[in-house]
Image (tube, rainbow, N blue to C red):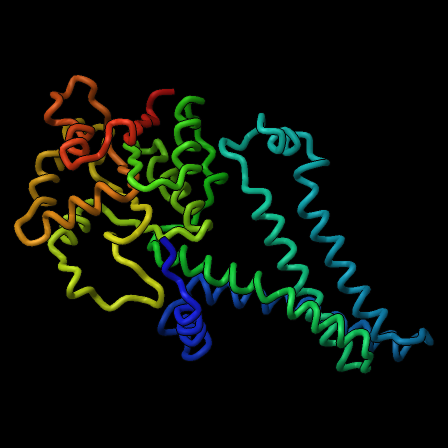
Length: 349
């Protein structure tokens, strides 16, 4: 389900461009805009400086062209080096690219490539704008117009994608490829299968003791889904228990394009139980179901849980626990098919 519309994007742009970040905080969309302005400036400012030098100290013809394309070409070479070096020249990183190195989960290389191309377009726009200021050329103007047209889709994609990520309310930023702890190959395959299938109603019970990386892994999985422009939400179990009593007829005031936990496509429920030295469940499956199935919102809560994909971040897995106390039993009671429930235990290495 996609919720970010052009109207939402314009509203977010207004919020980012008007007002002072010293009192309102900095959003991911604002940071992305600042980053691209930096790329523009790194094309614009060096072009002006090099043009000034060439004009004063040399007799080359059309110094504004030499300066602009020289700067843009330098940034293209730098980005190519920055992108290809880990893939081709470092032996350890080359193994990573082939799938047998340090990365537990491979980076989304096509997404990284698209990001690199976007940066190069902003470098080029900055350099060509500076060139036109130094000396007008019709060819440069036409090239600049082409670049501005080409940047339209990357701008919309990346800006709206940042909205999808920031509206999920993750506690930190993490791509799945940045999670580098050990995991069994069969569990890794289960996670990739969960991520690659977009059918709703998939549930993953993610068990692990303190320090196993279960929260980081859940955020990494959900972030990859957000980058695919899916409406994801992160919430702790304690907060969700309160939200179970929230009536959809009176939703709270939210950010542009935001969504509630009920109409998100992927939900991360964190800190259900601590794990580690705390062996017993502080929040049992039975207690969770009792609060979920309250008189005012029980039916819409159960419908939302059943129909959406959820990552349940648990504590220790106890195989000796009675069936009625297991979280799998709770999900089946709500109506989730057993085939749609995946269990991953990060302590089993």
